[in-house]
Length: 239
Image (cartoon, rainbow, N blue to C red; front, side, top):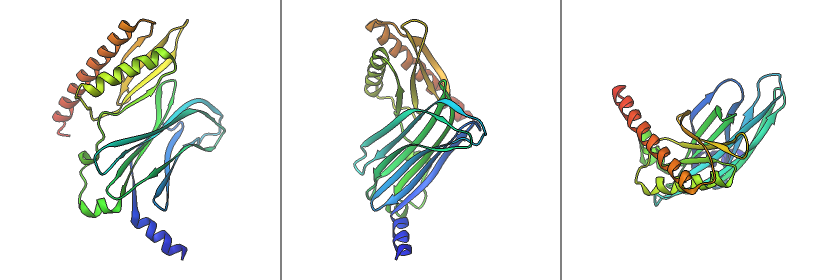
């Protein structure tokens, strides 16, 4: 009976790992389990070395595309440390996947703002696979995604203005834009915008609305220039 139930569940969902990256420091891993029509997602960190490690941050989030084309997002984030040779569950997500829906799940691990490891998984119903004999990567590409990790009101003000301008600009870039904020000397902080693991713009905050808005507009120009160069590079490489 258990075997039959397992076979039925495997027919309902297909979970496919799509990207794994690690610098052999802390390894990120996404583990999924199907229960009825729910997918239980766990973000896992693995420390393969025999030393204690601390000062790490994670972001685990899902982006589900409904049958009507709308997206819904669920995000978990936090800080963690690891004992020697430890595997730790960082956070969990529960995702309801119905017929015709798709969901991309990401796990990022960073230290001092630098990406240490990441993993991603695509989850979709079996009906989608039966309908599409071949799935091109561009069909599941997610555009216009912004991840924020800000700490202060100024950081939140910058993100809100940046995101509003980004979503109303009509530009939906095929890469993830990361906005992170770090404390600095005095009361200020430094906000960085990175794309494809590259910092393309950063600035020091100050309590001035016009200054914050000008920084957001400048960040958008840098992203636009980066996207243009990225397209040329991919075209030259015939990607």
